[in-house]
Length: 314
Image 1 (spheres, rainbow, N blue to C red):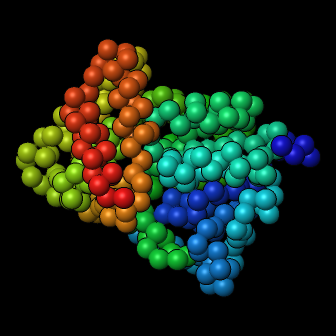
Image 2: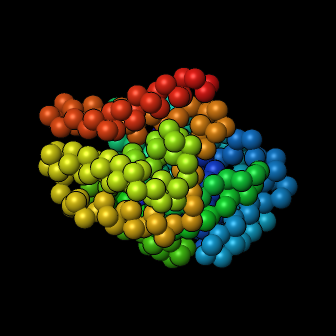
């Protein structure tokens, strides 16, 4: 880590690892609001350098004609907050991607799906401050340098190992100043609340080749989605996690009823023959719950189906 850092509470510098549907949207909003944001690109680098970054949003589209764009993190400056927006299937890259961006006060925020992500990364970086970012958003990268934000967009942050309250407060203030609804919630509650939506909808859209609205329109799949949600809520309660009641399942279903018909990230990965995020989205939480004496049979069946479909699809 680089040592030339003076702790400050204003003007935080942001790094985005994974400038796709999520990183492009949140990073773009922060940059539009005047924050210093440095973006790591992969295939889009040349296009964005020439044409900038376009965000088509239901809340108001905007274009950033010039952004701080990089091919490699070794060319990026150390940042106060690093937003990791990669798919968790690419987390093996983090040991090489993160170090150039870190200084002793850096906060790494994992805006990724699943449970168990932060503990695994903390083992690799014992001294690095970590937080979870739980995004409730419908967004997709439709073409090079272009993000399509369809609906929602709020984000919750759960503190895993951040030692600075001021950094977390400034992070939330920066998101709110950029027009993003953001808040701080208890870490385990945040991760398991996101799983209540993610575990049923990500896998079911793949297994039944359907969008969210189609699953909720049919009474049988609507009932199954709710039963799967109740399995997640039951597991969280069995683990002693507070703040997740049975009524949360109905809130999530009502929210999805209002949502633009949507194909979640796992469905898109399947459609484009990419590895699916089964390990952190299914295997880890199912294992944690089973070890604690609370199996989730419906979601265990869904995981098995996804393993079969994933192996067949690659």
